Each structure stands twice: as structure tokens, then as C-alpha cells.
Image 1: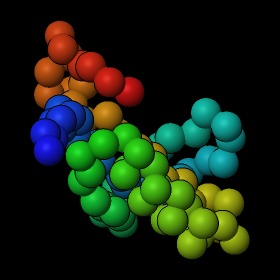
Image 2: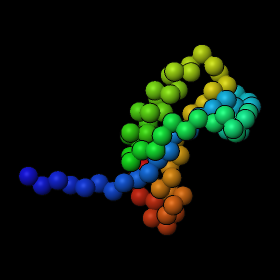
Image 3: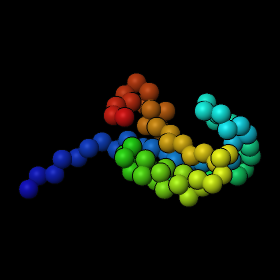
Length: 82
């Protein structure tokens, strides 16, 4: 039985309260309060964590969570994948 190894594509999930609630808003109200949800080896795993975190704060319109494609920041010439 052979195993195929997919490359690790590091994704970070962070979130916090934003200054504005517009669709393009991404400036945090207080950087010291930004929550690090976790680091994940694939977009799919990061998306699952993002969804769980976002759903847990659905009643606060100022809370927003983001998936950061860290693999693209680490090696922009070879970003690969999602």
C-alpha cells in the first residue's frame, strides 16, 4: 500500500474585533486582543477551524476571522495549491 504525500501548505487562522464592519474591513480594533486560532497544514483544515471560530461569535458583528495563506508569504515564488 503506497501513500501519496501532499505538500504542507501552512495556513494560519486568526480573528478579533474589527474597527468597522464593512465587507472590506480588516483593521482590528485592538491588536493585543487578536486571537490566534491555530496553524494548519492545508486550506481545508484551516477552513474548518475558521468556520468553527466564526460560528462561535456569530452574534458579534464586529468579530471576524481570517485564513492567512502563510505558505505564500514564506515562499512567494512557489505558492502552490490554494
